[in-house]
Image (tube, rainbow, N blue to C red; front, side, top):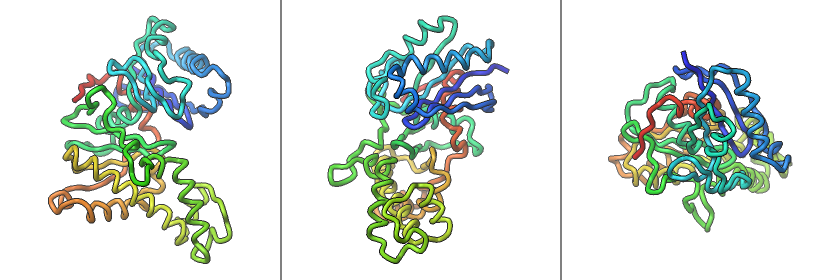
Length: 307
C-alpha cells in the first residue's frame, strides 16, 4: 500500500507523520513552532525537517501540507498567516518543488485538511454535509458539502474565527488560546469563594482549569460554559448561511467537549428556529489530535473537489 507524508503546520506545533492509503498513521513527530521561529530562518528549518522525514522513507513521493491561514486560490502560495507571519506571502509549494523535484506537494488550509480527513477516515462514516470547527491557538473552520471542500470565492471561505463576535472582537479573539486565558483570568478574579479548587489564584493554566472542572469546580465549569456559549453563537451564523445542520468539533478540544457542548446546544435552542433545532446536532471529531496529519496526507490521494 502506498504511503504519504502528512505535515500539519500549526501556530503551536508542527506535526509530521507517514500515513497509509487507508488513513493509518504510522508515526508522528512534533516540533514546537517557536523553535523554528527563534532560528530566524523559518522556511529553512522547515525544509530541513521535511528533508529528514523524507530520508526515512525513499518510497514516499507525495506530501500533503495543512497550513493555518489564507492561501492562494491555486493552493501554491501562502498569503496571510497571523500566527506564523514569517511565512506570509511565501510561495511554499513552488519552493518545495524546486528543492524536491522528484516529489509532489499539495497544500490546503489546515481546517479544510482536517475536515477532509474526518470525512474520509473518521471512525463514524459521515454521509451528510457538515461544518467542522477546531479550537486551538486560533479558531479554524471548514465545511464539507456534497463530499467537497467549500472554498468560497477566492479560496478562503469559512474563516469562522474571524467573524466579529461583539465589542469589535472576533470569535478567535474571544476563545482562541489568548482569549481563553483572558476568560480564565476574569472568572478567577470574579469568582470569590465560588471556586473550591482554584480559590485564591489570580492566574491559572488551561490544564489547571481542566483538572478543576473534572473535580466539579464551579468556576472552572463556568469558564468552559462561557466558551461553549461564545462558540455556539458563532456557529449559528455558519449554520444559517450554509444551511448545514451537522457540526463537528475537533482540534485540542476533546478533553473539554463535554463541558462546552451543553452551552453550544443552549445557544442553538435560543437562536435557531424550530426547523433547525429539530435536526441540528454537534459531535466531537473522532480523529482527535491526529486529524491534522491524516487530513494533510489525505490531500495526496483523494481527488479533491471544491465548491
